[in-house]
Image (cartoon, rainbow, N blue to C red; front, side, top):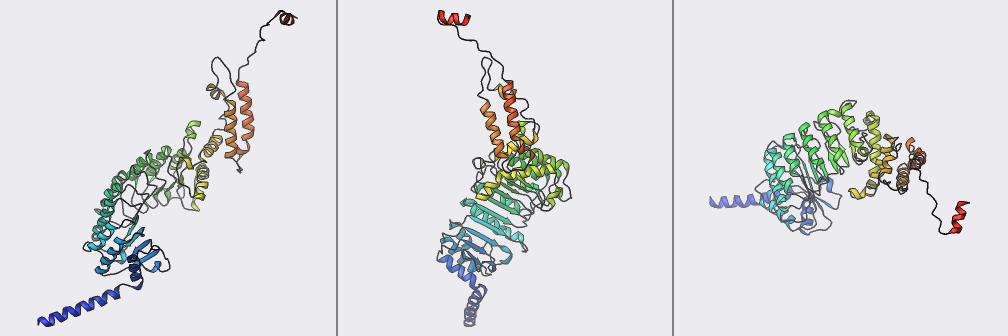
Length: 446
């Protein structure tokens, strides 16, 4: 009987081994071999998907329902130095769980992976997967070497809280995508606090969640922080109402870094016309016309996407004009793919000038404020005139290749300002110098 058991065991081992080779496809086997050889052309690993990676040399696909294959995968990952991106689709994976320590140890030992993408749409047992996701995040939390973190998963109530500490510890992140995570305001607030002060963070995408008024208030506080360097904020398909939208709009008045704000398909945008109060709030953030200085310090960078084309035609005309002006700030940078900071925005000043001339047509009607800084009580000077002329030269450049009426009027305004400048100067009669000798004295007397 014992002999039969030993034979059965041996046969079971043979059957299991044969099953392993049947479960892993040729593409996955090729990927394993390339990882073990440290192939320098293999930079992205997709676990769970293999079909779309077949013809892309830099991407390797892997899928298996056997635990031993994942242990081998972990070992190959640990020794690889060329992988930079790891994508795990839990929908097609059934063998990866907490017991496969070889896989997790491999992730811990690897030093080259900087981009992490996790998704599990359509997969049952999401609660169990959260333990796996939590373990993966814990690993990268300790290593703190991630640049990109992308999670697309309808996590359960407890699962969303596992994001806070990793986000706080991963201070080198430049891109965060937390899409379709079923995230509410309650869960967003600690996340917004966790990423505050991350100097490298440029993109935050929160599409497809349940963010509403209080979540917008948390994001507004983040945008108002002078240390916030976020340039792209995605809030498409959330629960943002008029109050939340106005809160975000008000935060833009003190923000100089945000480049795009995407708000398409939220409750406040689903009607044919957006509420006037919302459009007014965004218009004010882009161009506060209460004073010339307020206009100058308005937001001249951000592009706000409220509706998808062609519905953008329903926007308030003033808001459309202002968004068009802000777009001039970014055209050169987008075309040349430059980094986005203050030094890389040479067009900001031009946009500010265009707004001033358009919405303050009589900005230079009263020239006395300009003279105040350059003319003292005891002497008169024309040294302020070059500054006025230089400002108009900048205005001419700002309206270059523009068909706007304000641009055609720049020359006339410059001449008018020069005339007013000269007219505002006080008249001073200079007496002749006193004579030095008798001959000069007689000449003056004659």
